[in-house]
Image: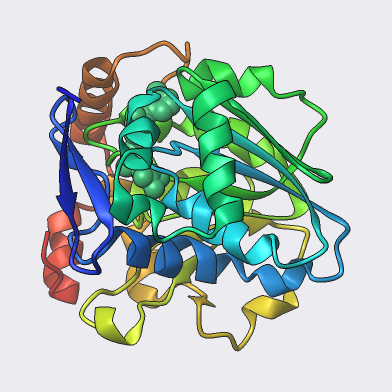
Length: 298
Ligand SMILES: C[S@@+](CC[C@H](N)C(=O)[O-])C[C@H]1O[C@@H](n2cnc3c(N)ncnc32)[C@H](O)[C@@H]1O
């Protein structure tokens, strides 16, 4: 427990602060609320209602809120679930499962899922199955057979400044290659570098629309889809929209320069300093000019 501090967020759900990354796991407004608004709603599970099977990848499972919310819905359907998780540390889930406020928010089936992963790293329930691959996501993704494509990828690492290795152009490309034709990759990040990497990986990107309570924010995150698959659900829905002019212009600033990790073994300091050097030499417009034009805070 030395690495983590427990606390209760505003919606009453448990969260952690990582002492080694010096960063919160979730928004202070609510761990559960964040997973619902940034992952469950943009997943638009209704698009899979006629599907026999759904394959899910949770990158950085942590306490498991993103998966938990999605499983609560999927387990009420007849859709067969194959779930994979990538997470370097077993402790967050272990800590969560010891806390009553964490246990109480989940149905018995989802709690069984978490307890099974915690105990054996595996989950089965009827025809559903899941595996957590403990270790560095950059290596562990290769433990999942290459032919398996994901319908949902939930990408939730610490911020790019703290964990750039999981936001690198190379890792994003790997994830993009593993998306199924109708799949979607969802993340809380609105960073220009991440969005630009998605685009270069051949994905179409959409902005997650803030809920009424989050109106002061311009976006809650990003949904990335395969280009060739025009999802009709995107049009006229309240969860995802095309990027605004402001967001498109953001992608033309120096902030869009990616994090690079060509060996897949780079450490965060190296990755960040390489990017800073590239930014300092860049001809792209300065992000402060964009901020000024759009009156956007840092
Ligand atoms: C922001 S937290 C994830 C929150 C989580 N989705 C939840 O609902 O609690 C980031 C997580 O990334 C994990 N992590 C950090 N570096 C990693 C790596 N290289 N590979 C896999 N997981 C990593 C951390 O252990 C932490 O649990």
